[in-house]
Image (cartoon, rainbow, N blue to C red; front, side):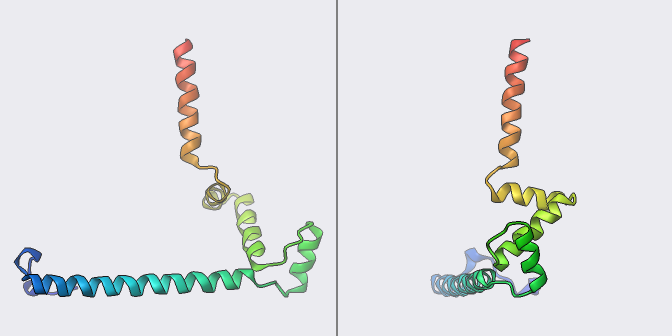
Length: 119
């Protein structure tokens, strides 16, 4: 953490200093986005690889799953976690398939409002 005695309010900086700091921040932002993009590309590459474990392949076959990628393996793990009662996993699945919990709540409020209006 910076020493507060050394901090200068932004308003007191000269135009040149403000420009210099803005440029430095912009460069750091670009670097951060580049790293995040690279990490995403690496993850996609790993997820697209086929699994090699014969036991997992047998499990997939017995379930009728044709896709033998790590992506399917992770999806199956998420499904198993939700099936075991993991609420976070369940919410993640709902988000992945486009069923938003907030949408469900707003639909419920709408239905309840109609019911109350008819009483």
